[in-house]
Length: 287
Ligand code: NAI
Image (cartoon, rainbow, N blue to C red):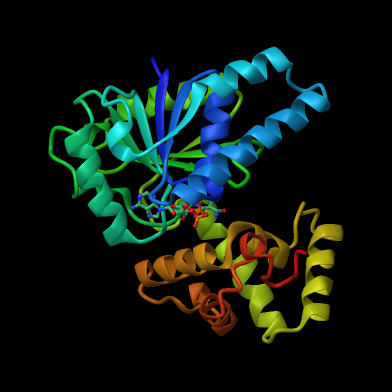
């Protein structure tokens, strides 16, 4: 499978990590965002991360200078129409994603694979935005945060996605030392379905904005449960807004099943723009 030319749309937490990881596989990557400021910030932070990896002798300076050549930031109308794979990692909003996919379908050549990094929306619903000819080349590729480190990639086959293509992608990621998992196109796929209770129950235990209690729950789950991060730390890393959208979408998709219900604190924090690490204030403060 030839995945030499990659386009990543959305240069936030996930898009910048995905772009960095693909570049580290020596693919040529064009990163797009509708915010010029975000694009510049993402490029700067990827370069800084590579420079640190050189200092730590995890990458050579020769490799990093090649990677810096391979990664570019662009506006959508500047990217190569002949890309092999386009990964969408924009805001978790179905209408906005569908609108983008309709444009991408028109813009890219017929062979281009279109994939969404959605955390929760059915691939089948998003595929409605593309023409029938593209549908077999439309699927979900769900990376985890931070995408450069987390090995799991959920490969989600929508109703019309080509099984052969999903299998080829699975093998490609496997060969690149990711841990791909084939998933059914069901709400939250595997991890985000299981993880709902990892966030929901701790929120219900804490109930209110109580830092001491959050710290206690985080440290118990780390020390006793063996998790690398506690639920409040992880929600701050993911982004409270992103986590809240995913919670709402999985809850709705399962007919407002109470065990998936969002917590009032999540909505309150989104309204207050306390979005976690990215705004330096979430369940914890990051100064
Ligand atoms: P983010 O809020 O950090 O970044 C989203 C970026 O998309 C922003 O830079 C924004 O300017 C840009 N954007 C919005 N609309 C756009 C458009 N129409 N065209 C181009 N750029 C646009 O969000 P994050 O966390 O990176 O999430 C992106 C996607 O990845 C979402 O679907 C989310 O559910 C999914 N995801 C998030 C994870 C996380 O831990 N944050 C983990 C796995 C998946």
